[in-house]
Length: 173
Image (cartoon, rainbow, N blue to C red; front, top):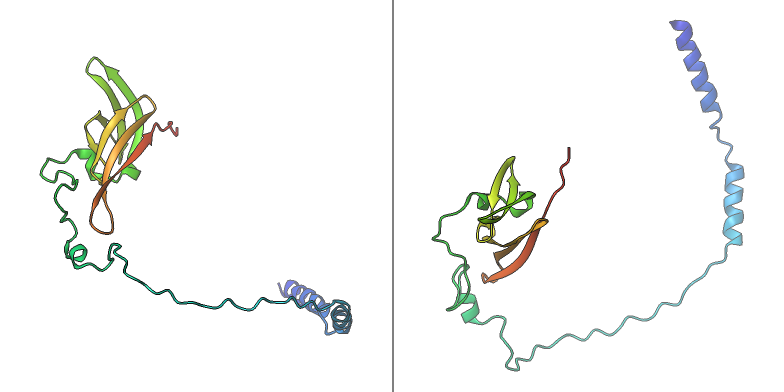
C-alpha cells in the first residue's frame, strides 16, 4: 500500500514540475501582441438632449379620475358583463384550464361530447358545459378540439371575454 502511495506522490510531483514559473515566453508574446494590435477609438455621438414631457389636460380621459378610482374590484358599472356567480359550479370548473386535456370525442343521437381528463378522471362535456377556473363555457365540440369562451377580470376589475381551445391529445403510451 505504501508503494502505491509513493507512486502517486511521485506522479503528482512530476506533473506539478511541468507547471513551472517559466512564463517569460508568454509575457513576451503578450507584449508583442499589444504592440502589433492597433488601437481603434470610435467616435461616440453626443447624448441627445432630454426634454421632459409636459402633461396638458386637453379633455382626454383623466387617468386619476375619482370616478374611475371609486369602483372597487368586482363592482362594475351598469350593463357590464359578469359571470353568473349564483349558478351551481360544475366539476371541471375546479381545475385550471391548463391541467385539463381533451382525450377523446363521442357522438350519438343526443349530440357530440368531448372526453376531458383532469387529474386522472375523465369527464364527458358538451356545448354549454363549464370548464376551467375562469368561468369557461364550451361553445363548440369537434373531433379534434373543444372551443371555450372564458371571462377574465382585468387590472381595473372589469370583466372581458377571451376565446381559447383544447386540442385533442394523443396517447403517451
